[in-house]
Amino acid sequence: MTAVDRAILEAVLLGTVGGLISVQILLRRLPFFTLAMTHATFPGVVLAAIAGVDLYAGGGLFGVLVVLGVLALSRRPGQGTTTAIGIVLSAGFALGVVLLSARDGFSKDLTAYTVGQILTVGTGDLTAVAVVGVIVLALLSVAGRQLTFRAFDPGGYAAAGYRPTAIDMALLLTVEAVIIVAVPAVGAILAVAVLVAPAAIARLWTHDVTAMTAIAVASGIGSGLAGVLISTRYDVATGGAITVVTGTLFALSLAATTTWTAVTGSRRGRRPAADRSAPATTGPSHLEEVG
Image (tube, rainbow, N blue to C red; front, side, top):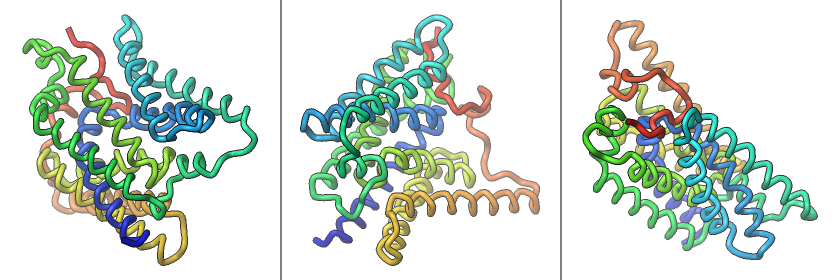
């Protein structure tokens, strides 16, 4: 299998996994959390580089600590989740910068971590994405109804006797796992596009969760493949190419659906209850303990 073949397979796997989890990220209003996680795991990567261990293992372990920290801070009385995430984001990234400043230069591995290098992924990277994909599918199969219930009606979820902490932790740790395996392909800086944009594109066309998931997966795979082809054809950064294609697809979808609405006076699908029940926000408001 050539490097391009592996890159194409990585794009398909990552597009599928990212598309699946992106719907849950959007329904739970977690884009800001996802952005924070891509940056706040950076200190773990720097520490791993200093210690001479696997960079992605270091980022993953540190990410678990960040998730636990966000959950703990967000459940303190009077402490908003968005504020907690902002604190963790700035403190985590600053710690990484401080640790990095003690090193001479910026290593090749750390550069790959920040911007990605899908054309150099190996069998281990492909296996990692596939394993996380199985985890995502297992989460959606076992707890899909609970995740939807929690997203659409957090008050009813708590009133029904469910404990939000367990389902929240399962989702956040899964998001963190997807971030870690996405890093070799698109880097920590651009990984948020893979995990947020597919569902954002899908929601422009439909508000049915099943249809949204299908469109998100198709968008993720299509953007990944197009980015790899553009990268190999014009010798440009693959992670950047994938992100540009994703952004272009979002812009075209927005223009098309806006024009359709203006011409026909109709909207594509009903707004989900998760969107109607609370004001729109970039922060994960549903992470707060209810009741």
